[in-house]
Image 1: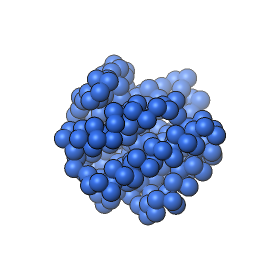
Image 2 (image 1 turned 120 degrees about the vertical axis):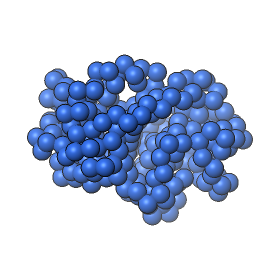
Image 3 (image 1 turned 180 degrees about the horizontal axis):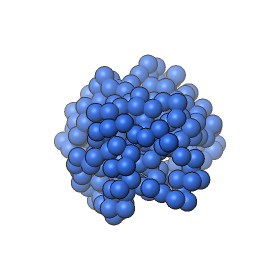
Length: 233
């Protein structure tokens, strides 16, 4: 996917963005690929693949959700995706969370260089951050972090009642959801919609699972990650 194909695909399939935004997204790609040579940020190193699998993919939630003016948490952001593209493309207040210092340091440098006043990056484990930030966010988004039955316990405690947990998944999304339904209900969530998409060039399937927080999460969640992983809800 070249830049023109990215512009056309996003504007036709997701949302209308102006040329300045696309220039910043291109700059984000270049900096990320360059930094990747110094320390590992992402396995996607080719520009054509990066535009589709990192930029376009990160923007898919904007097809379904208006993040402007909303508090948004990106859990397990890694190199800053989807959080940085969403911060560049919206007026949402984006918090990017990851437990790796080097990655958060890289994200902070991007935020400073781009002047993204609507974004901040925090180095912490999701379960620990969740205990002190319960019901704080309108949207909590996770992209390719962990199986959904684990992600639900990490993410739903931080969603406001009436807010949404958005799980960005690949072709196995429905299978993960089948295994996670009980956990989602137990944590105060309700599946509202399952959005199916296809990446424009590779034709890879993408499933965006929309989960609404309908009641407060019991304060005993989230548990320690080791316990969550060994014994998912």
